[in-house]
Length: 76
Image 1 (cartoon, rainbow, N blue to C red):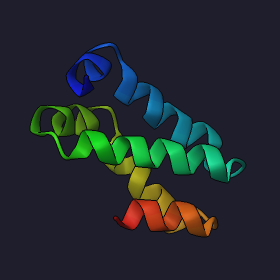
Image 2: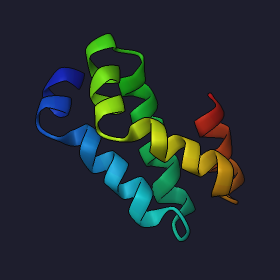
Image 3: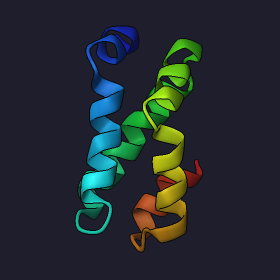
Image 4: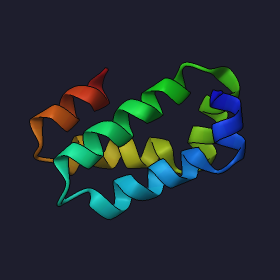
């Protein structure tokens, strides 16, 4: 299922959500980060994650996000 979601643009959509909601939506961010973590464990999907800017998005959250729950998910 991960491959199908990634091929349909799901990883890029999650990365876009992180950039769009990075300062306003802690619940949305928690779910987006958690979903990206599921992609990161798969070798092919992790490449898609990197190409979609996911690494940059996660680093941005570590540096700037004030929501504790989001920080916990990013650090996992």
